[in-house]
Structures are given as C-alpha cells and as structure tokens.
Length: 515
Image 1: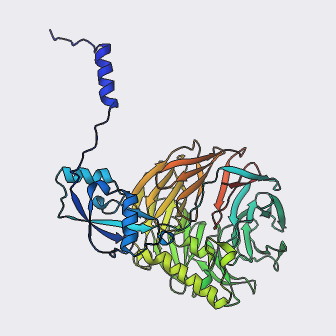
Image 2 (image 1 turned 120 degrees about the vertical axis):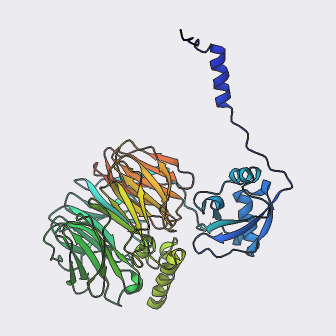
C-alpha cells in the first residue's frame, strides 16, 4: 500500500510563504572592482568620449550621465544633457541595469579587462509634464467626434471632425468654440493642418476635400472633387520639399485611389491607382524629392514617387487589412520649422524656415543612417517594421497583440513605437529592431488611438472604456488615469509644444487636458 504524505501543517505553510516573500539579496561586487566603460551613441554607434574605468558600485544611470557629460566637456550645469542608457549585455536592448552588470561580474561572465560598450542617447532637453486634469469640456458638435489635430504653430488651436458633417476649430485658452466649418454633407473623417499652420484640410464621407482659413473660419475656394467614395486620410507635403507658393497634399479614399492636390490651383495633380481595396492611411515622407506611403485593405503597402506618381514598390507581408502606418519622421514633418517653443522661435525668412525644416528632418533620420523607417499595423494582429528605401523585406515582424491592431505611432525621438489594439492593450517596441519592450495594461476596452508627448517621455491613450490614460514610457507604468468622458473616446492628440492634450469621442464633447 502506498504511503500518502499528510498535508503540510500551518507552521510549514507559514514558513514556506515567508521564504517565498523574502527576496534573495543581490550579489555584492568587491568595492575595489573597476569596470572599463566605452559609451557609444545608440543610433550611430560612434564612441562618445574615451574608455574609462568606473567602480561597479558607481554604475548607476545618474552617475553615468554625470560622467558622460564630463567626458563630452559639458562641465557647466546649464549645458548638461540628460542621457538614457541601454543594456550592454543584451545588444543595447532594454534599460541599463546595474544589478545585472554586478551579477555578470560575480558569475564570471565579465571581468575588469572587458570593455562594456554602453549604448546611450541624449533625451529631449525640455520636459513635458504629465497631464493630470481636464481644464475644459467644450460642447459644440451634434454628433460623435471622429478626428482631432492640434495646430503645429500653437497649442491654443485644436481642430476636430465630427459625424455632424462639420469641423470645428477650438480656442483652448478660453475653452470655447472659435469657428464652425460648415460645408460638408457627410461625416468629417479626417482633419490635417498644413506644416505652417495657416491652412486646415478636411475630408470625409461626402467624397470631397475642403480647405479652410483657420483665422477667419472661412472656406478657401470650393470643394475639391475627384474621389468617388469616402476620404479616409489626409497628409500634407513636407515643408522642406514644397515648391514656393505651391503647397500640395495627398488624400486616401475608399475608392481604391490616392490623389495629390495642388491646393492653390484647387486641382488634382496626380491620381495614384493600383490598390485593389480601400486605402486606409497615407503618409508623405521626406526622402529625396518625396515619397508617398499608402496602406490598404488589399493587404499591401505601396510606395509612390510623389513627383511622377509612379509606383516604386509594394510591401506585401500582412495577411489581412492594413489599418494604419506611421513614419519615424512624422513629428518633424508635421511641425515643419516649429520646435517645442512653437511660434516663439520662428525663423524670419522663408529660406531660413526651409533650412530649419531640413535640419530638423536630417536630425530625425540621423539615428537610422539618414533613412526613414516605416511601421504598419494590421487586422492580422501583427505589425511590421520596414526601411522601405533600402528593402521591400521587413526588418522585423512584431507579434504580441491578441486582436486587431488599430493604431501605431513613433515617438518624436524615433526610439520607440507604440501600438494600440482591440485587445485593450498598448504595447511599446524598440524602433531600431522591433524588439518588444513592454505592455501597458490598464484599459478595460479597445484602445483606439495613442499619442506621444513631444519629449517622448510620456504617452496618452484613448479607449472604448471612456477614459484616457497617461503612461511613463521609460518605466511602462501608469502616470495618470484621466476619466471624464461619458462614452467611448475615439481621437486624441498631444500638442507639439507639450502643453495640452485634446480628446473627443462618442459623447460629442471636446476635452482639453493639462498638467
């Protein structure tokens, strides 16, 4: 007969729980142990200063930041830059972990003769505060708000598109409607400011594109007609590529086509045909003389020559509808020559403005060797990371979402990708190689959109669960829960100067959030 052991006693259970609760203390390195360090730029790989030796006990990110500033000659406290460091034992993926380095030394995986190549990246010199409160809830639309966009020039102007066939421009300083833009005969699905902030473009279910003067609140000319079905997405030509006095934009439609418009002549420059399904999203890149990227329900992403209208290549890896795409340069292309100071530091001449826009674009692509990166999101629950100017094969397949991926965006510094899905989650990814970083859990409904703060340290997400949530990107933790909407939140945007967040949804009210 088999002997059956008696169940554990209360004393044994208590001892086991205490043992599980108490953590094993981290390994301690000898205080005299010195580790050789070589800082390298996380984007270019170039060395930052000479090889130096540092005590293992002093390998904290704060100490490393002070040391690197000293090596680079930033001795004045006002000149010091905040740096972010990455794991040298994992090919630069993940945050720098002092305990992991000490453990590797104790376990014999590294020694004092080994030179640790520590990847680093300078963070934004300005810091955006997390939004914590709703400063205004503004009524004005008669139906759901479907799109929001801040002006690149100032955070006091927010544009929204609605199911009531109108667009609105809101004064965020006073919390009042500024202009109601009437003229569409169908839902307004897309709104987009020109890089200079002097024209607003809207499009929607009446198949027409309209241009507006945001100061007067009046239409500029008549409706631009050409599409035979809904306009789903609008994107302006990058400022540094525009011909003087002839700004253009591109629209995507459910009629399977894209159209490039001359906004001054109010005519179609080029019609781009080739997709076999609805075109869901479009972006105008700043590479060369300009390229256009379009995502479609035919499961492909197509790349077009913006000058000739010819098809350059087709990216075919997704197994279902491609819902959204984003460029690593989206932030600088959207804002042109404006930086985080907005209209306070605008160059005087047109030539200087164009030069500023070129410099900002060059800086945004420097980390990837001057190349734009592209990320695409699909109903097949996956995303792909591409460098389309060099290859039609993806750099990485990014899996983890359990349902459709609805929205994707790059951080302004180009280091992180955020994706929002119908599985109630926001996920963060390394924009260099598509490696998974973390999942932001907190929403209890599908996440429709997300937006980074201009310093890339924070992220705000909008959900079906009626809330917005602000997240700390570095720690992956919730910074602020933002309830207030009475129904689903469809659209959210963070102003380019970092001062405000604007949101709208099913409850027909625009909410402005501040710190």
